[in-house]
Length: 96
Image 1: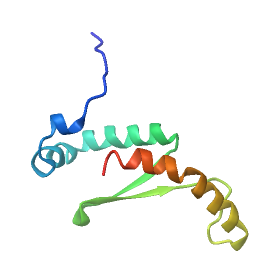
Image 2: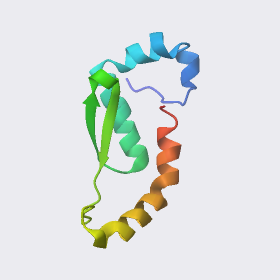
Image 3: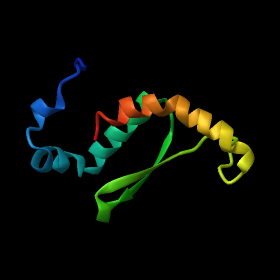
Image 4: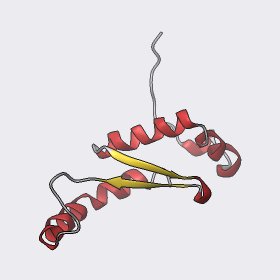
């Protein structure tokens, strides 16, 4: 049976970040769901590297055809990053 998805304020479900949300997020299947949702909202495929000692993730965004080691790509990379900065903020700020 299919159910209806609806937006909810996460703070109504997880009252305490450390004891509720962090415990939920520690489960690999939940972390995968969250990362897929972030990628969907950004319309980008991200490479996630877990950093368990830091309790964090490193996220790699690859833009095809751009070599960041090449000075010729700096302007294009900067323009792309600047053009997407607001969207990154909107998406990631919900989860931080």
